[in-house]
Image (cartoon, rainbow, N blue to C red; front, side, top):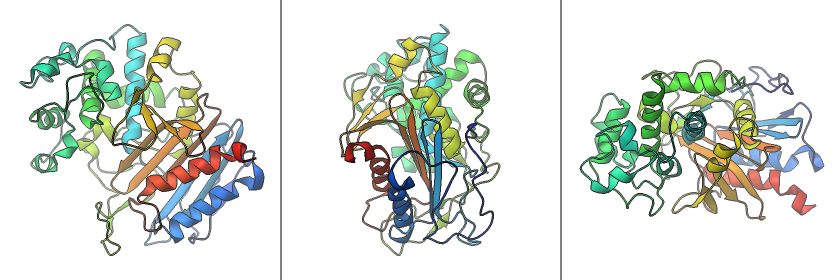
Length: 386
């Protein structure tokens, strides 16, 4: 995802190795004392104390932009992370999918009150009577009760390839968690179904719809959904490192850069950049992508359970209340070796996107979400501290 008109080429260091102490900034710093010194220190700390390979953050505040990084993109070569680097964005993909669904609703091609069964006959029912009442809105805000297929790793591992239909079959082998609309539970199956509905409505591949409706018109040149089982990240990118969710300090680190993301697809398969995500969310939060009715629907939230602390969920977006009392809006995503947060002010005037190219933390944070929360606090709570 690139590139805002205010951006300049901030990768001045090229292939020069970056140390853990070497957080760089570029372009005009956003307003605030010390030019984001608190953010700079947190980036360094995530690497020196958190043990992460590398971290980057891009902040937009009005027409001002700041980019910083610490650590490395590649532990073998010592190459520094770049503002141009692409990375897997995990569940931030859901915001793009929800946006396409809402555009189709604005065009009158579907309704949020349509049942999934209407668009995907026989696909959602799965022998469970309650499932017939699942509608599109419930898919987008995770109130459907449909089982989360990624919670059944054993079944996932039985498939060599992962077309969307197989992911839904895994989910529907399990009973619903609750009656549609009666509770909340995060389920990747919801967005696989939403992606299938988009394809049924439009007659085109989901990847094509995202490109034609969002990436191309908004200039997000580093943002796309991989086609099929393509395991590569096209264009400049950081390596992605994973401990496969083992928490012991001596857990081996694996390189997960090449990954068949088809098992995540509409739920988390996309690739982007910090600049692209900031540009997309600033436009989305600012009401420039969706008409007012669909904008209102997207940002109407429901309470969450067992998810991000102090969060509420809309249609593909979430709000998070920070410890200082400020509320930010956006989405987070986690995939093997790549965790990201993209959150901003409700009007899109201020935005920060952060990515780490490792999925662990050894330095006082339980996981990278703790790092992200501290970065959001440093960015959005400065005014309240002044």
